[in-house]
Image 1 (cartoon, rainbow, N blue to C red):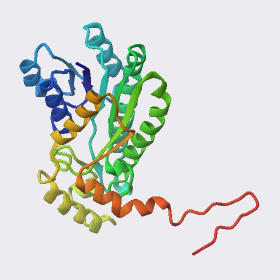
Image 2 (image 1 turned 135 degrees about the vertical axis):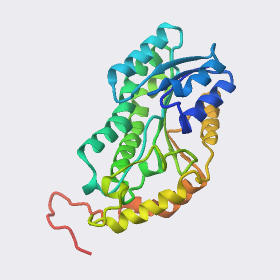
Image 3 (image 1 turned 180 degrees about the horizontal axis):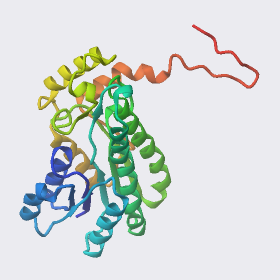
Image 4 (image 1 turned 90 degrees about the vertical axis):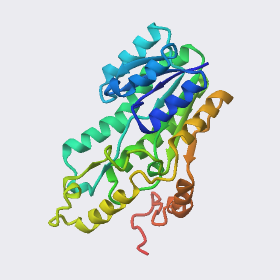
Length: 281
């Protein structure tokens, strides 16, 4: 039996992981900005769960949750950094406040949670950290610039952190789903004002119009079931090993196959110390 700490358990992937882990007999530290949204799980599994309010943007809250749970005997050996959301719209049209919130949640929230649990995992001889990134953490797409930026950062963080903590028996896995049936494209999605209201005066109106149509068609129709992700992570924990990267879903694989040639950086040029001029194709 493991003790899982999952951020953002009120819905979507976080909720699915909590349900699957609990059904398998594990203990779960449930967290959400609105604890009432997950109170039903706490009541269903009163002996297996603890419930805390948590806004991952707040470093002090992250450390408080981990400390309070550990004092109650719920020492986390599995961390799932799931809390996060999408911010979409052309970079030029994003507000400073929305940019800050995206970074504070999607990136700094992951960092604060890792810092809070790592001392406990080291002292207990190991553990698992699953950072929920995205296929958008490997490939950039127009209109999701800030979301790409935070997920690329989480991917890089996971890759480096895995090397730092491997000597302590801690596995760090970058979990990169494609489209799964969550409300990512619905109520959880934050949009640039010119996308939200389809401002015809925006220089990015055509892009935003296409994005609005795409998200309307996508919302609730994504092919992946969040419980699939939950079962994959459960298998990793129960077999005692996790890879550094997990690309989840057929659509994510298709995206990888379509865009992976771009990772060869066709416009990249190496400039030696004795050279000064890039060669224009």
